[in-house]
Length: 177
Image 1 (cartoon, rainbow, N blue to C red):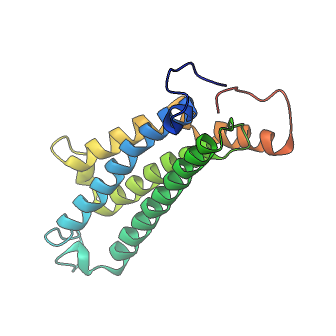
Image 2: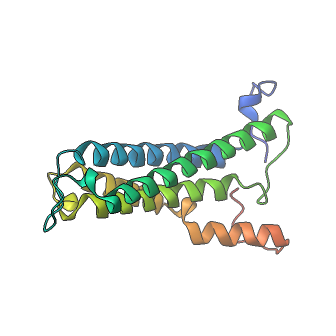
Image 3: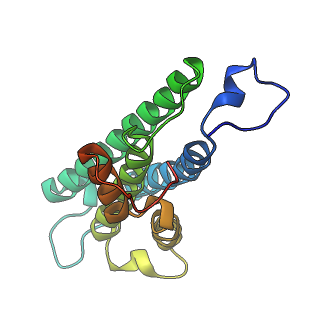
């Protein structure tokens, strides 16, 4: 789909509209997930683990692994967001229209999924008080869940869209790339 603009000679104006707007939504999720990780790591140096001998969460190998897993999911989400942005730029530079086999939409859905999963891990690691109104972690949890369940970033829908496109199955369930 081509968009009307007086700036047709400028690459940025040839970028696919829907993937750009969805990628913007993903950036907020990346920020929330990274903030949740930073918060959990900062608190780990002063919070104990109830009903254990750990004076701080940071001493626990189990907690360390949860932090590492969440960090890897966030890092992977950043990589997929970067790939989606690179694909958008490449298609615009080449003056080509994206189709559903272009993975920008699925990459962005994976960003949402991994950010949500990372925050879930961090909430579990941080403890039950994570969901208290006074705890910042509950806000991270609500924000990432709200954003990651947007219809255009819903994981199962995007897997179906991408799978159908890869197999050449028509009609696909959406025209939105």
